[in-house]
Length: 492
Image (cartoon, rainbow, N blue to C red; front, side, top):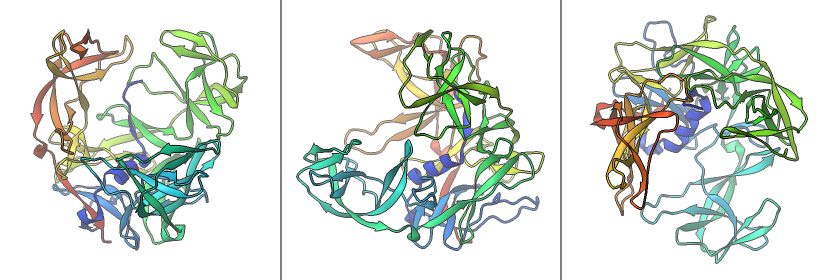
């Protein structure tokens, strides 16, 4: 499958929890005031008395959501972890570490952290313990990190209950006692609102009792499931809302591998819909979604390359073939055109009046490309151009002359050649003995017509892009050409 642009609300929280700077790096912000258009400039988002929203504040005046801040506990938090074992959702601070034991019966818990010898970082203040729930696991307990300890041996409890020795901790291991449990009453509880809106698509908010409200997900009232926006290219003017309650149909029910089939462990909840694997679909074709029909476990096939191979069903797995194709709702996607800002927001709308801000993508009008807030090696934040990625191969048969190219996936034979991205990002590893990765943004040049090689001087082979096209890498674009930003806490 090719690249598809997907906007999913939870993705925002993943980025924020991992990449937001510490509280000390944030400033204060106030909620935006009306621009006279009659539209809510915050698109329904508002802070509460305790749970505050944080924002990317761009130097051109644009504001984009960043995350949440617990003003009582004085730390960033996120609802990304989902519902806990008690069925409730909480705004959880950043967590880390791995659970180990310090005795051979696996009754004394401890926390293990990896410490890089060159680039050490402070271990996370909290550890989140999960509990089994069906075929997955959910958050169950939040603990503080205790004092550092030095056990002679650590142990791991295996899935069958056996306590296995890990041996002595290595030089890169830091072991800490498990601290006291943080009661959920010390966290902000969130609830997901009923869908708002009069049309087929409604908007649901995460809300807290202190008045915080944050647009979280869309909901398809006809299919009775939450859904997320899906569009093909940054220039797309329409999007579909595809069901979140869906599975990936990888197997097949026939010897030609044309009747796709979904396998679900019997301990898991069955999804209502599924989308099939396809080796002939082009990158910008819309993926179809189907209802499900339960079928016998046999026959069962798997596509391997150009072959369709019979396989044995797994015990404890239920199988479903595709039923009727589902009609998905559509939305209009529009990039703002404010002349007061260079960085523009994008919105999804429906004829019934729903207006939903794209929580992730922004558009740099000067660079004519989508951009995303990124923290750079020097600690600054800029809206960096989104596009391709630079890969390094070789220009000669001996694999001694490095060559940078950008590979753009086209899809199977017969698919149209997609327009190449205007920009591509190159990640540069740290110099020996240093910690900082560097980032370069390059213009993307013309199609690469010469030979490209991959491997090493001892094993160098001609490289051919798989169902794609190689492009040359153009000049570097100075990072200072992109709009800067800071993260601020809403004081409203």
